Amino acid sequence: MKFHSDPITLERLKVDRSVPPSSRFVGGEVAARKLLKQFVRQKLRGYAKGRNDPSLQQTSMLSPYLHFGQISPIEIALAARGSAAFLEELIIRRELAINFCHFTPNYDRYESLPMWARKTLKQHQRDNRPVTYSLAQLASAKTHDPYWNAAQKEMTQTGYMHNYMRMYWGKKIIEWSRSPQRAYETAIHLNNKYFLDGRDPNAWTNVGWLFGLHDRPWGPARKVCGLVRYMNAAGLERKFEMDAYVKWANSL
Image 1 (tube, helix red, strand yellow):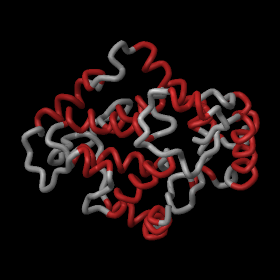
Image 2 (image 1 turned 135 degrees about the horizontal axis):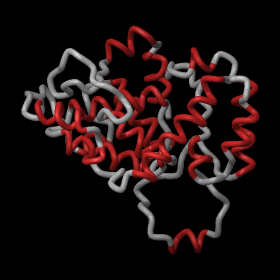
Image 3 (image 1 turned 135 degrees about the vertical axis):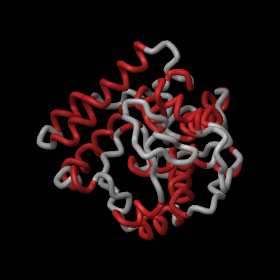
């Protein structure tokens, strides 16, 4: 996210300079309100149906501004009060995430996951994994999966990722890691390093959801994931125009 700041002050900050400024977002209250108006005017109608389609880009993209306190959730809720689906995410899901982090001392640890999820993942920890990737390979989007690579490129170039692709992105990390604990550490690392809205209660809870937090067991059990919800490329292709999303991400 770009800010108009004193370059000397910025130079003194101890930040990871391997992460470039976002090519998509400009920081600040003015930019946040402009984005909110565009969302309400152009994307709010049909949000409930279109929000999951990566090729439509019908999400609000306001989470970075919420994370940095550059816009109030109350202001957003009042502007978008005509959409029950959006308000459910903005108010109920956000509050659920905040409560989880507030009342869970180890909210940022693998041990915070539900017992049933840790149990099933442990039972399948030794399952054969046809392919595994290192952290460096994942960070640089060098996998065999073009949809996952597109999502990772969106993350590293813009500091954001479409909400539905975040779910697919994380589920594949579980599948491609040598252990669920390693997968959790990898997801947290990439989440906190590249996402503008990383290190936020929503972000911690979103990563936890990948591993079963605020979810239920899904049977029958699968290899590696066990009873934790599974996602695959065929599901993306069946529901969405994924070629359009890949083409857009590769143009970033």
